[in-house]
Image 1 (cartoon, rainbow, N blue to C red):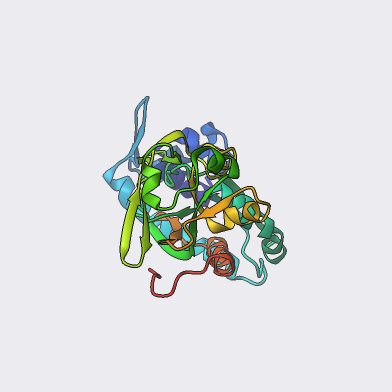
Image 2: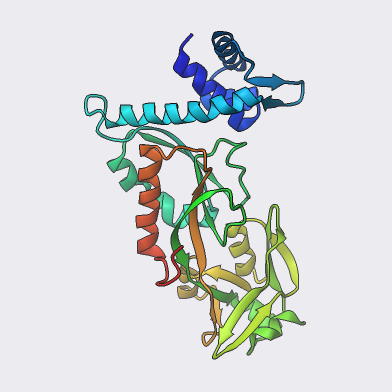
Length: 308
């Protein structure tokens, strides 16, 4: 029995709650993962996991052992990456999940420079705006906009996205140019709604001017759960939309979108890199997080006094 592989398999089963999911993330067969865990239990002479036909639960002994195992695996990873005889650069596979517009417009175009500096890091990048279960899906970290609702995660604030209100010329020709944000809450106006997978339709947008604050909820013809789809709906004239300015800039320059309410402002959207509290910040994860922070500092730096 390879004790390292056995401990790694056991830890991944605990994190995913499934032998099948653990096998997928480790690129092993389910049979191999099962055998490794069984061999580990036989060596330790203790049951680490309770198995049923529907789920896998860690035992009390297994939970205590898991806490020791993840620390040991982390130390081994650091020891290997610190040895110049092995490699002077971080290496290995990272599973990350990022918002689709941020990936398309900022992150992926910058990846050649990242891989030039860290050629041995393999990125498995999920590109979506859905809520990801980091533990269940064995994701190392996520990049997300908005205040984090899962307080169990460890998070680093890496940027603040400036926001604006935009509409397509075709929409304004049909509904008219609003002179006050409150007009967007009543006919003939519509907004493009945004739906979060677990929270439902997004909250109202607060806009500020000279001490006045207006919260706009608005009616919608369409609500989407993806940033690129939200932009496409706005370009199609389906409603007024709230966007990070970096997403709208090119379309404004081409006359495809018009910025509204220049004398009003919105609070910026905070951007976070988050990861599970029991997930070791390996060398490869550390340099990826630092790269994201440096990239956001160039494109959407944290507003002074708002860093958390």
